[in-house]
Length: 285
Ligand SMILES: [Cu+2]
Image (cartoon, rainbow, N blue to C red; front, side, top):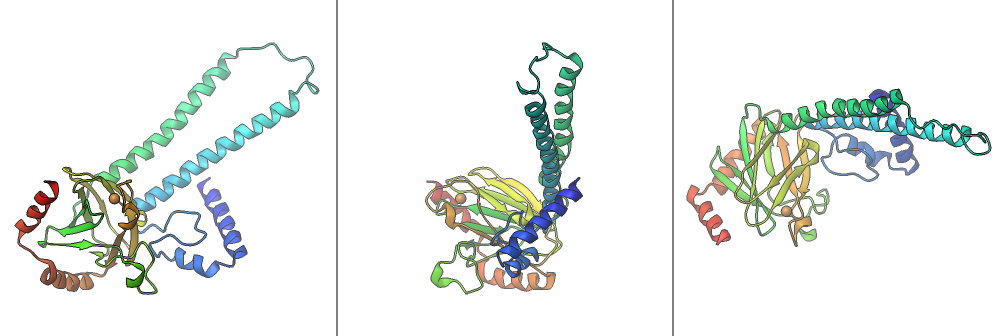
């Protein structure tokens, strides 16, 4: 079933993009650019096992929903054609059918159970963190920026959206930032989120991550990116004036590149551990 649906979607996708003459653009998106693309009708490309699971679950649900929709439409058609006043002038007086009533109660309940099992498994997989190799803590601030802290390495930095006059031509508008969060490829990253003053949410579609960042609370999730590249996300909690202007940019690099970046970052941003708590205390006053 899911095979048929994905095949159909691919056909529809091909037709739509070819008709619009956007094949080249769409091919770029297919390769996994970590951002939305013109005429996109599906999720962004998955680069983590969790997002692959989300893709699969979505297809599975679409299959069930499509089957039910077609079944109900067929029933409606039969009723309209065979039991209208002209075709069926003397209607049946039957009002109850025990077997039928049991069936239309039990079958939908079973369908819900069939949906609930993989749904809960996915929820647990998102929040049960495997042994991690790096921790990154993202703090959404009351000034609508993200602060990324690497507690294993003792530094942190601010990440702000690039304005139009600051962007290079290949950097996407409203998504590119001055300081990207950088992580190594094929490593399990423990992602912690919190906030100062207002509630934000940390979301990166390609990673299948979306988790609230709440003042006074530390939320945790994880990801393991399987492909190098820059993956974009946005704050996903209506948090105020600059909600739309606090993008998330995660650069996934090779281990060697990561080590080089780490050495630079430590030189640039390492501060005494107390500095930040002073800033936090001032912000909360
Ligand atoms: Cu926000």
